Length: 175
Image (tube, rainbow, N blue to C red; front, side, top):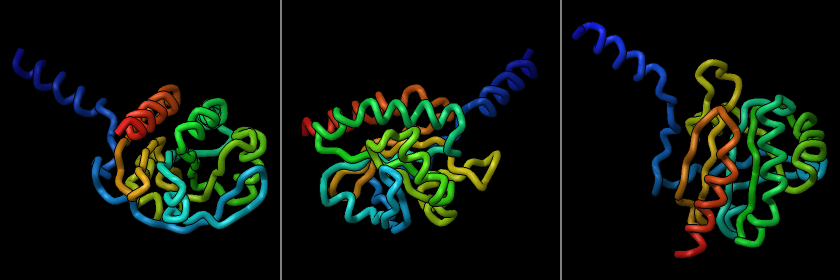
């Protein structure tokens, strides 16, 4: 019986999802990269984004896959609510700029930018997908205008990322 309990406990540990290592309250690593909004390329610098208010920085594995498309649509549909709260949304993946230009139009519906998360950015945010290190894990961060992480959520299932980040932005606004 004891061996069975130990085996079950061990299997539960293996089934536990890995969470991003950036703890709440830590400083978000600064970066500059290329991105696209409405199909147009631009330079994205984290510090510049934070000058406008809080930022939802969400990492996704691969443009034009079913989960990433569903998540982009959900963020697009909620973009007016984020804007009303003074927050910006930026999607990040390891995809190249031409792919993200197309994704920003077709799936993000011109509502928010998407940008390239190179290996250094993925490592800095601890979002390297362990099963496929060339991809980002599905992780959402809310960063306050001072550059502090106020919320983190990692789950390959895209269904709760928008509601969790929106709730965090609302709590931030209420401070």
